[in-house]
Length: 105
Image (cartoon, rainbow, N blue to C red; front, side, top):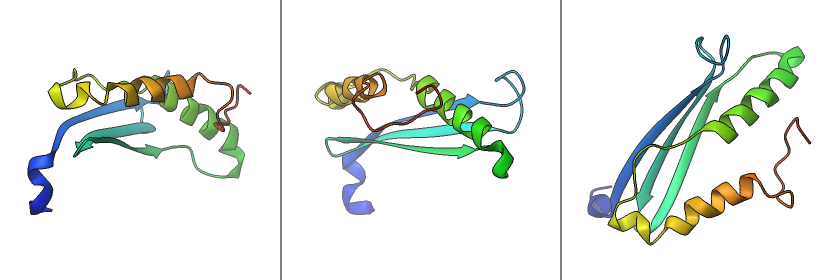
């Protein structure tokens, strides 16, 4: 929206392949990180193996995407104040008390 354009920034993207050898193929995930006002949001979209018999593979690929996705751009003055959000998100990934279920558990 035009009325919040000046409050949007710090856009960054990332991609994690899950195809053959986790390097090539048409499977994987892409992510978009964006700041709106003082909130940082992350959107992730995945294209994973289809069909019921591929549930285990899908879960493993999702876990790989979730744990491997890294945004490359450094922090600006706007994101320094919200740096705790990124650190908190990383801590949640490694916290056994979160409600995130993976194939490893």
